[in-house]
Amino acid sequence: MEITTQQQTYAFLWAFLLGAVIEVLYNVICAVRTVSPPTKLQLFIGDMIFMVTVSLLNTLYAISMTEGKIRLYTAAAEIAAYALLYFSVGRYAIRGLSVVIRFISGISERFVKHLQAAGTKMSGFIRETCRKKKYSEKN
Image (cartoon, rainbow, N blue to C red; front, side, top):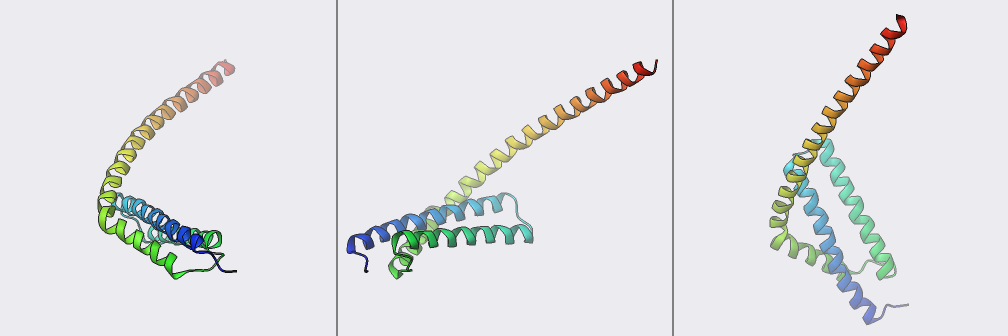
């Protein structure tokens, strides 16, 4: 059974949205890489996660919208949306996300330092309490 023109139109328009989602995911990964340059293993794992996510999204999209068939017009719509966003606002989005990621990582580093200091004080207190208890049991 063929898909109707209305279904094809919906599939085409939703393909634009899917291309935008893929581009946003790519921008987030680029921003993280800009903030902290990855090692070869991290680069490989990040690329694999991106490729698996995109292929899963495209497969689910094809199953739900085009009866599991890959249509040229949906692929063209995805590529067009991705390219449009990448070449227009993508670079600025990466810079903005990099600033946000740096800000969040700075806050989390401070938080972790406070947690480490509190943990050190707590372990010192417990150690001293145990020593006093052990000393008082001997006497």
